Image (cartoon, rainbow, N blue to C red):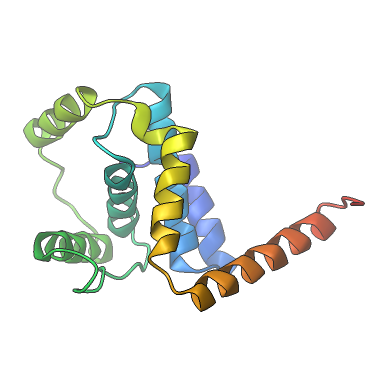
Length: 157
């Protein structure tokens, strides 16, 4: 279950009209914090991100399942299950036995999946898959966001 603060942040992003991926980013951020705090680990950065996205879908963020070309069948199936769970007001409690088993397995994993170096490597690997045009477009968008944030915070840079 995501923390209340994370849910509030995601809802605020939704109210501000931000993209579902931005809203989901709050859940991924929470997951990275949990790993850094030592609550549990993850086998890889990709797994940590996947857990965060799953939590986001279950919390009702309108994040679509990955395209068939990008993910395996089981990943898509699980994402669709998460979406369905996020849409329905789930009355059934999660299985305590399964939750315990998952947490026990994750506690055995390493904490390095959330390190700055691992996140940087993952981001670069994901960027390499994109076309040069798409990368350039994303860089311009990031620059626009930085500029907007600088002026809104009253910074005189």
